[in-house]
Every structure is written in C-alpha cells, then in structure tokens.
Length: 323
Image 1 (cartoon, rainbow, N blue to C red):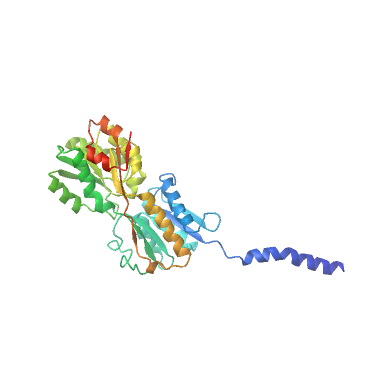
Image 2: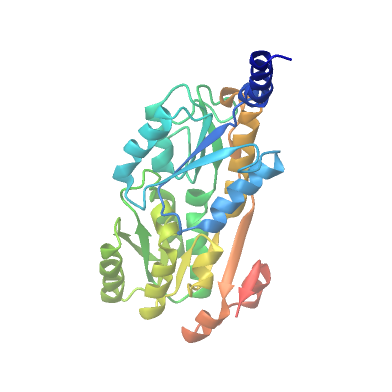
C-alpha cells in the first residue's frame, strides 16, 4: 500500500469514533431555579434528584442539571432565569412561588415545573388544575390551607393562651390571613399578624411578641422562612416562645411543633414531573399534583423547657416525638 493511501485510510479510521460520538443525542439539561442558597435545604434538592431517578434519569449519566440559587434575594431571580432561557434548557424546575412567577413571565416555550405552597390558578400560573394549558405545571402543597390547623394545635397545647402571633412574609405572593384570623376568633384568641421579609426583622417580630405577652406563635408558609427555619427556631428557644411551623427541620432545631405537607414528597414529585416532560409529555396536559401527606412532629425536650405538657391524644397523633 502506498504511503499516501495508508495515511488517508488511517485518518478515516481515527475520525470514525469522533463522528459516531457527534451523532449521539445530546444529554438533556434541566434548569433548577431556587430562591434559596445552595446549603439551605440540600435534602430537598436530593429529593428532586430522587424523583428524576425514580423515573429513569440520573444526574451526570443521562441528564445534566444547571443550578441557579438566588441566595434568598428574590430580586436576583429574573437575571438567573434569563440565563437559563438563554442556555435553552429542556425544562426548568422552580421550587417556591417567586421563582415560578418569574419563570412563567420569562418564557412561554420552555416547559416549567413548579413546587409551591399556594393556589397556582389564583397566582396565574395555570388555567386549570386538571388541564393547566400553556407551558407550566407542577406540584402544590396544602400550606395555606393548614395554617388554621397549626393554630388549632397550638391552642390545644396552650388552652389558656388568649394572645398569639402569626408571622408572615409580606413579600411572598402566597400570603393569606383570612382563614387563620377567622379560626382565631372561633378559638377566642387575639391573633396579631407580624411581618418579616428579612433576617433583621426577625428580632423585631420576637420583641413584639414579648411586648404583647403572646402565649405562642404560628409561622406562616414562606420559602424564605423555610430557608431560615433554624434561625427562627433558635429565636423561639431564646425567647421561650412556643412556636409551630411547617416541617420537621424546624422542630429538630428546637421549635415546639411542626405540621404541614411533606416538602420531601413535594420535591420528589417535582422530579418525577420534570422527568415525564423529558420523556415527551406536555405540561399543558399534565394535571397539577397536590401533595396529600401531612406530617406532625413534636419536640418533647422543648416542651419540657417551656413547662408545657403535651396532651396524650396529641402526642399519639404525631409522626415523631423528638426527645
């Protein structure tokens, strides 16, 4: 074989594997747009990846995830979302209402899967729960709906308390106070609505509770509060304030009690929905999923420190008693 022919043949042989690789389908990329910081709730991010895995997608093997965290500064969300749109994600997952609203406003073509605690129809994210329409669908929790139940549980533990606080984040579009204020009147409780949308306002809120001589505190649903739940629990311990929030981490950190939808389940379902879209389903035809699992946790050590005796029927209903 002549030298020139050999070189041409060798060149073609070497080029073949590269050409074959170039013809392989590109790995789909998921955008993950979070209001939180990367280290705030790593267990929830893991739950999202588990939902993907349960439906056939493993990060780094057959799917890639581009993470964008606003570090609890929601004003950063539009720029982060614009970057994901520019990079042409296959689908974008948006845990928390502010991220979902920003995402919907940014694109009408890239599929969006939300995980929120409010009513997606009222928020304008979807047309109907059973047929969302457009490019948006996802998972919603029962956080606002169970707020009166949190007050009821606190009232059951503190039947003699006539003054209580309700902490809300006014910057959260899910804020709703009508039902819990109605419940407070039914229980004969004077409920004071306190506001905090930044860490520095937490101390002011707890100082106000002390001034009011409040017997307990219900913490409202908010992605910001979830990200700062350990700090809120620490303040509750420092001010000897019986408090109830929405998930187990708050109770483990020293809060008296938690009652709410399982966030772990919600994120996992978000991963499942994201994977289904990657497999070809249309968000417009995927009904909004509502988590139905409600969990209750009670910290008996905190109860003892507060001088509170947990009624036996209530402790029997708890998913876990933390000691």
